[in-house]
Image 1: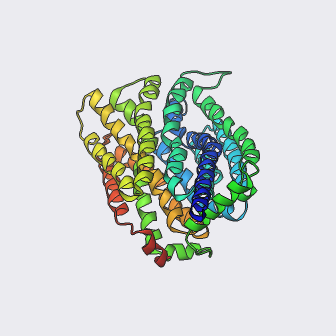
Image 2: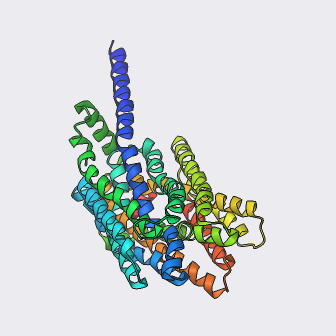
Image 3: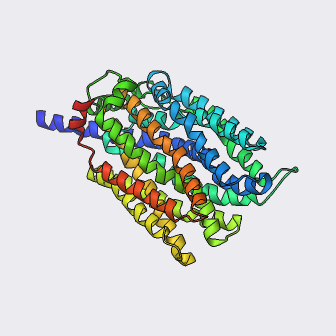
Length: 437
């Protein structure tokens, strides 16, 4: 009787757990997914707007490269405060405030007329967006157990390639039109900035900070989730400082490889439309349509990679392989003379690069306590985000210095992502990491 009773209790706990996991996933992931689509569209719409800005305002590649990169100077400076606000203040308040601020600033970018105005607009936009990404990464660790962490992260980060896939044809369509005497690129900022304001208001009422305060979970579900997360989280409750993060070999290692991986990611995002147009001679509209391919492939690869990573309980190879595939693609793209189909094919393979993100960013919150991970995630993404400035800017400089050839820039990007992949494979297991922090 006692054994049968124990089995009944175990089955009931399992049932509660499975129902809770499904309920949390369906409640939070679709909404966070939409938020990140809007976030990434607003961060990267300059890549398409520059096609119209160069015609109307005469901005050259140097202005575009600096405008794309200067965003990350302020962005990286506020990463850690953003993550800590989620941990110590309130996720819904921080995310809501951040979205309303960046949406308003994106709309105001439509008023730009000079390079200096563009630099200022991008700089303040970076400050406004800074806390969103690290904040959500920490927030996911409040709600998703180890078994679901990479799938949850991949579902959330699937917004990166999908935002490009959706934003690409939309941007191409808007660029070809003008209303009320304003060029299409100005309307691009308005149309893509307004949703962030509306969703920021919605986030304040929709998101919940912790399972224990979730009215949409039963008390039984709250208790199961809180206990499971507590059992999986490393025991340290002490928050580490930025200085301690800088002295941790593993955190510095992860920050350095993130910098290299981000060089590939942001160079591809910001320069892909320009490279595709100049290598193929496509119209703006056709660039927008064909530009969907790499990012749709990246989206599918990210979902499959996250699912398989959770199934195998393995992170390192699942993070490194997409970078290796992209490195090969960048190498072949650096060789001139490909046919149109082959060029588009290699760009499409390069889009797989984005699949490393979901499994890589599942690592810090699995091997550190909440308080440690908040600082670590902010620091790692801060250092990595320097590449958001350096990558597009250096690529533009090398393109100009080489007389209008993309070859050397693509080889630099290739080297960066291949080294990043090798560095991921050297990350030690969680038990070793806990002793180093």
